[in-house]
Length: 310
Image 1 (spheres, rainbow, N blue to C red):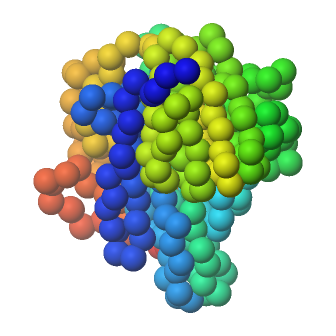
Image 2 (image 1 turned 135 degrees about the vertical axis):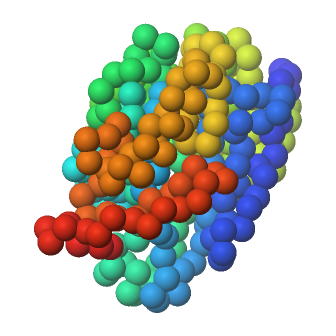
């Protein structure tokens, strides 16, 4: 028995009544397998009339994975996708050479008030797939494998584990699952992965000999481990094959710093050009956007009659 290689404490940030804990990237551990970003959203309670409004913004070179424990969010993107995500479901957006998306609270959810709690991750794409066409996949909760192993109820989000395989697209060897450990559970993690990590969402859990606190991630390089819980716990397990160094700036991820600079200029040019015939476009129905950090926000173009403001 041993202890995790590194324990990472989530850095919490209040976004105006909504708390987000950033776990990855971390100074001493930039990635876990292909995972370059890991945020815990909430838990938060929104009073009637309030909600989430993440204006359209761009991505390249990554896949975003959104997974909720509680609440609802609405995804819209420049492919024309409009999709609500509910607890236990998965939204997988592969940005590839470029996509724009927004994340908001639907009006009916906003009107009644709601709670929100979930995890959002970014997975870096393998270098040969960074310029793939953008795509989007949604899997409802009842389409993902759910099974019991070692006293834990597991929902498999990406990859294969314990004889089960998730339907989500996997562009490099990846493992990602949600596990609810019953009191007294003892779960052996899958073997054969370059890197693994265990994130404790709630409850009590130990990775081999080391107890984690809620909001902590323990990382493992080149080996498996055993997770135990005395009183029950909720954990996320993630990892996979190491895919090489990645540059991260704002919402862009790439194996090339020059590619990120080009994406920044493409975003500026798209905003200045009114989103027509430019590298990035807005999701249908949107006329807001998030500018590059430090840039002034130009006046948005007037919406067309068939493209109402949100």
